Image 1 (cartoon, rainbow, N blue to C red):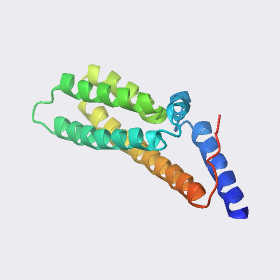
Image 2: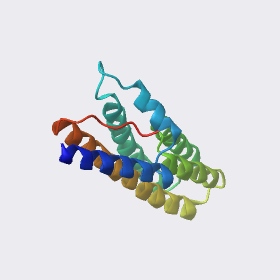
Image 3: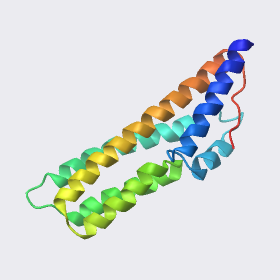
Image 4: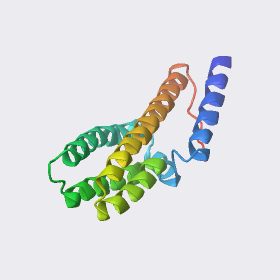
Length: 152
């Protein structure tokens, strides 16, 4: 049982750091509350959809910003969509980056928008990596016969 205890502590410490460092917010906790016995993979499935959407949106943004004539309304629409999906899973730093990005779309500032895209990619891949680590820890706890602690 010692392994389970260690994994649970690791899970709690890691989860807590994700909130403390602003990677996740209250919305992620709300998602977790929707997960139950009948749907044990709910959070993982929702987050996987977010990953798929995000990769598409990042590609669409890169393409839109590489056009001869950049359609900033289209860029803004992609960023707005990204903001919505990151909000819905509680990816706070991604959402905040989208808010900032949208301001520069309004100014039609291509250089800054390109920098925002790089930063957005960085924040997205950081949170993706962290969530994948979190899910891996959850799986290890369950496989070791333990229950995943609730972090509030």
